[in-house]
Length: 319
Image (cartoon, rainbow, N blue to C red; front, side, top):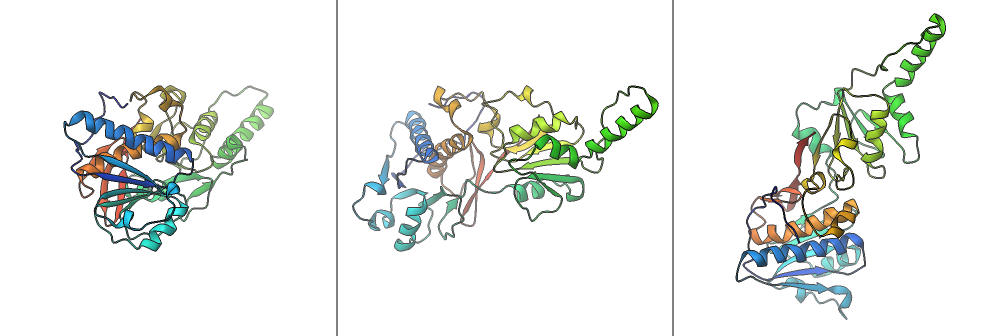
């Protein structure tokens, strides 16, 4: 059950029944998503005396795929996995505000229906939303190829401390220090110099966690540049803010940054993506009840509709 004094959710109520359509595959993030919907419904039920119902339809239990269960007028949240992609294509549904598709697979899918992609890449959003972050004075630390300029590739198996040292030329500064000590025969106490042309460090990784990269930045005594994390990168349910002694800022989901939100004890043990999909399920039921053309503030931030895409704007939080 969700309880919080600090988070104000947009008001919502269910005025009609909602079908939750999925194909059970024992996937942990799907399970968390459905848990979130159930708890969102519990909150709505507590807030109003008469409430509509939610109906879970598991297509893995169906003997045959019946398009009538998708084409009727009941509101629907469809959790899309690879099997249901084919079902949607066969049924050829018309887009309307009674249908919302949650893409539960990392592969890109073309949809003409209203949808939300939890695996959205926020790197472009970061550049566009903050005019102070300019490409010529920032570097993106990434473990994948980017179309943006000024990115620095860190591979999963690499020595991260050494890679960041090379990027900021700490190694050259240390070499100069050792050479001066050799020549003067005196111990030199100084903080290593680093590149002054880099003002922002942006962490945009999929396989390497920010929890590995931030300590590597601190290890190299790089304190001046601002460090940015993108959504889904930092889980402060597992770490204290004090553990990241850096000038850290971020566009991040509120549910990950504020571990004073109170859930059942098991919630804190979930992996980062499980937490996100739980919060997404919780939010979407309330968002759907409010109406997907309205703006909505939830556990993951502000929801808004842009054409047929639902976009989540995370909170901008400074440390």
